[in-house]
Length: 105
Image (cartoon, rainbow, N blue to C red):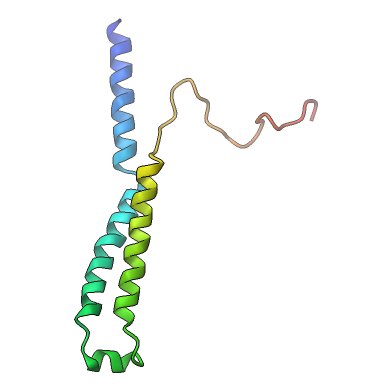
């Protein structure tokens, strides 16, 4: 294997690692999970005065649980369907001239 091929393969591996590391689903899921835990804890520690302000609805608890569920959804989605960067042989789909385009048009 030539040095050029080895360098190309190394760059492809680094690109795949960067694509997985900076997947927006991981960032969004992580932030929602962390904030969901914080808000849920605040909801569990709510006093009667806090509940009275919100018409006896523990809004911090419900919002925290919702944020936690959304964050976990994003993290599970990212785990089940990881990002795969396009290879050098795959052309990017531009949306024009795909296989559904009719001939002569």
